[in-house]
Image (cartoon, rainbow, N blue to C red; front, side, top):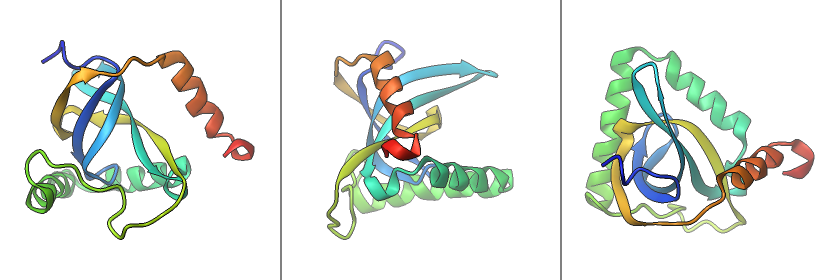
Length: 143
């Protein structure tokens, strides 16, 4: 499995902390710190949802929950995704058929427990260029 988890892979994930349910994401990096493995990924979204401040606030709210509540939310997120779209099905980007300019948001600490599937093929990406572009998009005047 480690051979498959290289940058450029498309992953299928569900994670309550980052409001992801059966979403396809692009793997940028994987980290091994404090004995836990996590991923840095790009998540497709609409421009209105790409605010890093809002995502950070929601993630911090999730982190303040008790361990039991976090576990319950993670399990229910996975189960809801499976019952809605099946085990390997992908959720649509917008539930209501919403329109708008699409963008990406960066998620820096996606746990390995949120992983549902890994694609067979990898996309060739320049990680350094991609990370510099993501940082520049966080500057308010360039959003």
